[in-house]
Amino acid sequence: MEESLSKEYDFVIVGSGLGGLGCAYLLAKEGKSVIVLEKNHQIGGNLQVYSRDKSIFDTGVHYIGSMDPGENLYQFFKYFNILDELKLHRLDQEKFDVIRFADGSTYEYAQGHDRFQEKLIGYFPQEKEAITKYCEKIKEVCLHFPLYNLRADGANYQFNEELLQLNAHDYIAGLTENPRLRNVLAGSNLLYAGYRDTTPFYVHALIMNSYLCGAYKLIDGGSQIAILLSRRIREMGGVICKRKEAVGASYHSNGCIRAVKLKDGQEVRGKNFISNVHPSNTIDIFGEERFLKMYKNRIRNLENSISTFLVHIAFEKRSFPYLNYNIYQHHQDDVWQATEPQQDLWPESYFICTPMSRKDPEYADSMTVMTYMKTEETSRWQESFRTVAESGERGAGYQEFKIEKEERVLRHLETVFPGIRSKIKSIHSATPLTFRDYLGNKDGSLYGIRKSALNPSRTQINTRTKIPNLHLTGQNISMHGILGVTASAFVTCFSFINKEKLIDQVKQA
Image 1 (cartoon, rainbow, N blue to C red):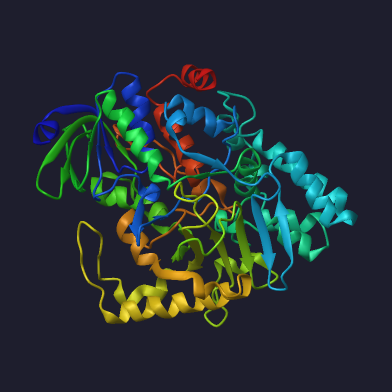
Image 2 (image 1 turned 45 degrees about the vertical axis):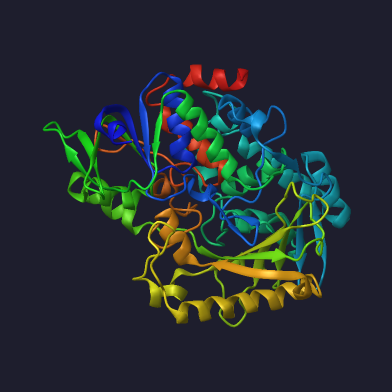
């Protein structure tokens, strides 16, 4: 390992999230020498999993879209040479997502544009025109994103101010006067932390479209993506080092980075550097004096998306049936309130899924419940730090806080699944502090920088920086999610690899 750190690499990549691993694969495949530095004991960022009571729990990835043959993520994974080894399970064709309200009403999303539209019209026969217009708008918006459509050129969202400034809530509200239809159309907005005033419609459209084009679960967890990618990177001569935290950088006289400095005192030299950590953290690592004041202020003043409280439930053996769909439960009629949780009503909205296990496909081994939580709720423990690599303590008060929140989630969950308590073996939870410590975002943000329809250019982050040999990748650069982060890796690498050639290779994979 020490020998690996002593040489100079073509590319030094800080962070082993999917964006960093994607860049490492793309560049290694082009014959470049690459090293990936990860501060934690486990690679993968949001792809990380953990095990409790013999159950595997995902921390950030619970299902993926665009995985039907020929779709964009399917082709990306084919190009990465990992598709054949991925253990995937397709969600229910007729209901991959279920939108559920406090009155018990449920609305099912079907896979495929035509069937999705037909089912919605079945629920709201008087709203056929609005539903048809909505579905056509999703397709229209997606056409403006070339890489999303595996194209090198064509209509481009970056030059379309009208598209970038189209607000998701306002557009959907303008389609119909029916409040329930409005909330059904936006019912899965926990996927992207939808904010009433700022979230652009293109974020909604791209994510919704991807799941309509093939919604799948990753059997036994999403970490397999990171494991397979790292295997391929190493097969091509790439190096991946865990427990190597970048804390600084040294420079050549021409302003280019010479090496990153590690917490353990070592240095890793490179010709080019790619940061897969939050842009604000990137400024800290590479030296704030190296960035323009205007750029630093803009990055540090950008709002991040909200964080989460994640409840993981392990079931008694063969006690709870496996659900081949996800539930978005809303205990209020307005789904856009989810990102503004109120203490007395919390949790107003939450996502429910049962992970797919090879052990027994008929019964669920576990359940994950994700609801939003503001970072301020855990502010009294903000000075603490705890990961597997650094096992600090937060104290008894923190455990009491978690137990109280778990109980509130369980009380709500019983309204969806009466009697569920009797089937539970154990409960574990993660707070915004958990995500802060493992992912490195200063506030535990789940989806990184909030995209805004009010000022689109302000929230668009360029992959290139003023430091000549430093580039950015990850969910803050393009979009969050498996597809968004994979796309960001390609966008970053377009600076080093011919775009047309690369996209053609993906299409032909």
